[in-house]
Image (cartoon, rainbow, N blue to C red):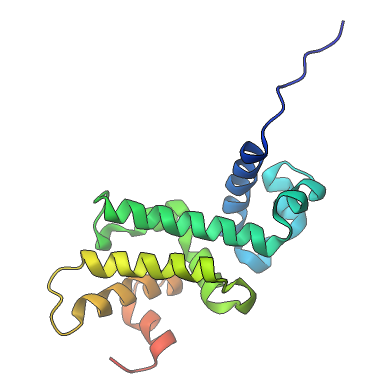
Length: 166
């Protein structure tokens, strides 16, 4: 008796499955720590399928980063959380590693990833209260860069990128 095979997934369904597995790998291990072998294991797909659908590890990362940053931006814009309460969202989406890698790894600074990060920053600024003398922008930067340092000190994250300038 012949066993029934599972229905074949569409190209878009395959891409979404890969994005979900790769998201977990990049969020946990960062770009440099997520080897192709780890991506194969995390996604349940072979190397050929990964490269056939995305072309490179960097393109997989870009897709994951843009999707995660856009989702965080959407949640913020629709009022699902306040800017100060974004840490659970960041943790759930694994944005610490993703943002750090977009900021620090030149090959990952693609126009799409940088634009998604900028949109998240703008959404934070828009939702900040009391935007007098640039305080909203400063607080938004502090929140984003605190996420990079993960040490609870927003100022240290901001200084990492802007030095001691206000």
